[in-house]
Image (cartoon, rainbow, N blue to C red; front, top):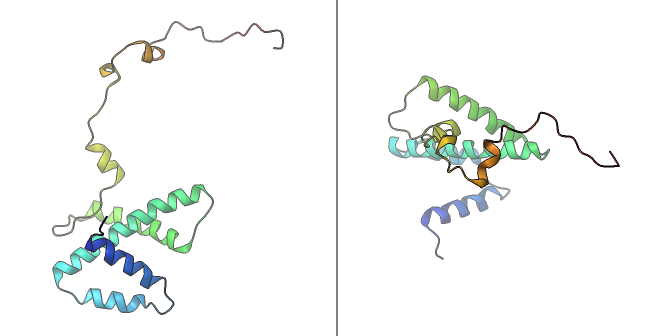
Length: 138
């Protein structure tokens, strides 16, 4: 399976970042001096990175692991959400939130489910409030 040009760039970028002589200020300065279209695409990429790292931070926090970068990404994701609420971007396509994604999904009503024995527990209203177990050990 051949790699796309994007895969090749990302792989070389990750390898470069992991090296000791990597200078993030130099990369930032170079990317900021590009034309507007390239700058907008760069900011789209950065917001995607922030969003994905913030989601990873939530998963890592459950496992009891964290880092300063994960914390920063989480706080930046909150800031991005606040900015998206107050400003309508014209040339940027920012990542959608989970609530925006779920709002576009069709709503499923329980009455639409085919009622058969597989879903009989949903309509089972004839059960007594308490369950009594007749067993000698209880």
